[in-house]
Length: 536
Image (tube, rainbow, N blue to C red):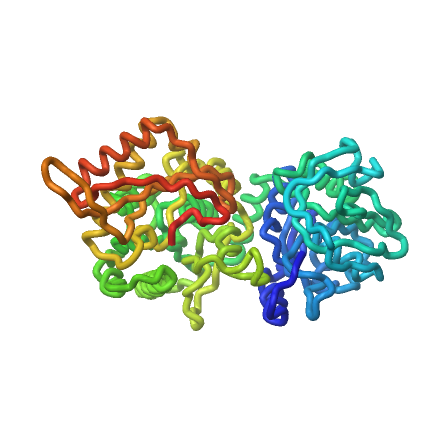
């Protein structure tokens, strides 16, 4: 890709990303992570076609690979250059295991570099769409057109192929856009087949997975549920599990899965931190204690959180404080339970991606996540995170199969720090109440318009500025609410939702007329990237 400074730190971060654990699926494809922002998309594309894929650290050892026993290995893209000092490279013995390998972008360059070829900076960089010309229509490009549109993102190019490798595709700027060593079953593509911008990119990945690796499509959510419940049951034994329940999709599905596995040995704790949506605590208690008959304790701690947040304006500091106080309140309640050995969380893969920087490059740390940061180092409870490598849509599918209602499963994501990160600047009870009322009206109008299920996430943001207005015959100097609504499939990328003007008009009228202290409403039309979905 390109140069990134402080490569020694970069390399150590990548190594720390994902730990290896034993996988029991018969057909597995592992993805060595070199820090691409698209790595998780490779896993998604393969899983969507019923083959289990797992992301591991780039420096996984040959013995660890043998223990997993994958049918195929994919080397992800990354932001670095293979010729840089201390550039991350896989163990060369991995290429001698006889397992098919596919390198993507940086991954292909690593293959070339490690097999005696030459990679150097390109005089003409390629970013965005490019026309791909296929030179060989078999194996990797089987049943694909000879001309394709592909998505490029690189500033290096192959100047010399290693012995035994041949070119199988090119673009006008890249003479080696895809390569193959068919004898060793090692392939590489300079473009990103995992992104939607690459025409028939998923089919290329499936050619590798099914034709070259010989995988069979037999990984399903039903099998995941069955095997995960069995693992949880065996691991927990006679001990107890405590879970922080928020009422959102992730923790709700985790609670249901674990409850079905171990029953009354699961104890849920709901922390009412005063930063929640309107009537949230009552809804959670009614659903999980009333309807699902789970053990549930509600910890009311609004004053504790607001006291610690008083005067704090920095968003990262707010997240850290909220995470720290949540753990304290949660652990105080959990410590009263005897024979408790495990802490369960609904952590998802995007949570991990946004909290741990594998490279310091495009996948660099975006913000602290409440599930993957802030836990005490001396915590004696073992973690159970059944969804740590799953995406939101996969978790929703699990919840549906477990019998959770749409009123829970189709809830839009809500940040762990709650409304505190939707109030720019200092947090106070008055400002929380103002945003809470505005947010309720925003969501009400979106639901009335039949748009709720089409939108990935919608909410209000209270800005730290006041503007001049006129209400009646008087000038006002009051607050601004920004409306944020996005469409997405996994939360990793998002586009602003094109809500009809009449709906936006109704939202604005209701918020300004019904919420004291607000005289202006604006609409955020930023995509992710470059912006994140949340404002803080």
